[in-house]
Image 1 (cartoon, one colour):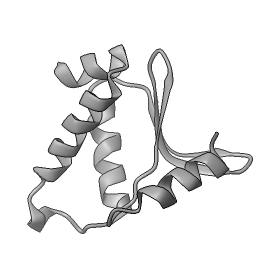
Image 2 (spheres, helix red, strand yellow):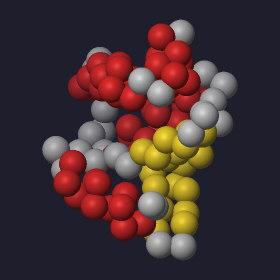
Image 3 (cartoon, one colour):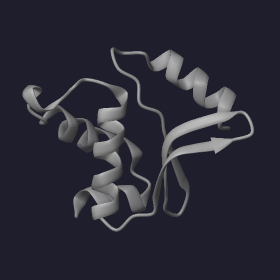
Length: 96
């Protein structure tokens, strides 16, 4: 309930912290440590929560790994190994 309340209210920091804790709790033995693995889990969780979520969303300039629509649209790009700059650059170039 807190997860969806944070998402709906636009409390992005709390939502992202909760999402990170969720992903960190996945046992190592169950993870194949790929972006696609986390993307699939993300998609299943949001679908089970009854949210409108799409994966591999294409635009004229590229694609986003996932997006979820609430009052606003949240765009998600999954990167492993601390590639935040690359992720932001990709989002700016391809989606926004």
